[in-house]
Length: 117
Image 1 (cartoon, rainbow, N blue to C red):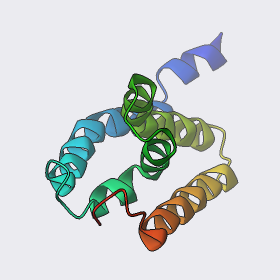
Image 2: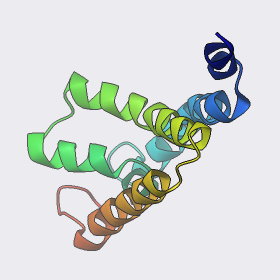
Image 3: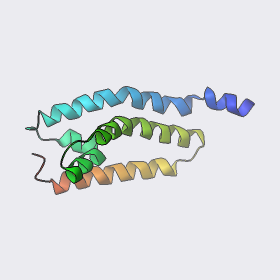
């Protein structure tokens, strides 16, 4: 019983989730600002939401699933980071950061013509 109580009120578990939930609308607003109604440079969009950009390029549009995935991306990162911090396992956090940086770099470097960047 003590262990479940510790999980419910553990700061290291919930803090990354709360921070990610707070940052999500800020990041979406910043990404939309860099898109500038389709005429912008899309740099922030590519850096913050690289998987969403790849999905848009694959589907050639923005289906609802992609919008929901972009809304959930940072909170899911928060859940993963919070769980790993709670379990004192730091390697999955490192892999998460590496995967995001590599995906962002690839989307920025290959600069698809469908996005005006």
